[in-house]
Length: 153
Image (cartoon, rainbow, N blue to C red):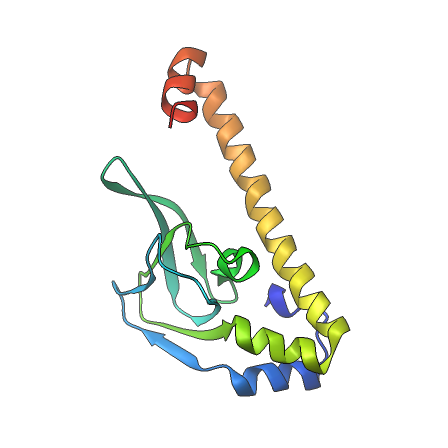
């Protein structure tokens, strides 16, 4: 799991001992766009759909599977959830709260910093992907239509 890359076994066990496993049934939500976010999730089993609301409809922006994490943006920036995450099949996930991350901070600052860096890398990877998709969309849509749809909102 990328978010745990380079984390020492003892710190990983310390964190996992404090974090609950969450079971979410297919078609139920982990969270909805706009909810307050105080934890992130790492999928152990199952798949989820990441969606955003736009003009009254839900639009799929991505899917995630075993080993992927989500919700890390709200843990990092303390802002409301930027998207909804719905289980598309029965899921089991590790819920990592900001409070549990703070426990790692108090125990081992270097390992905490590595977890934060891993989370930041994941956010950057997704931003690069979004930039690439947006650029691709701009190439397919005439400039005036693109500016109306994407820049006006």
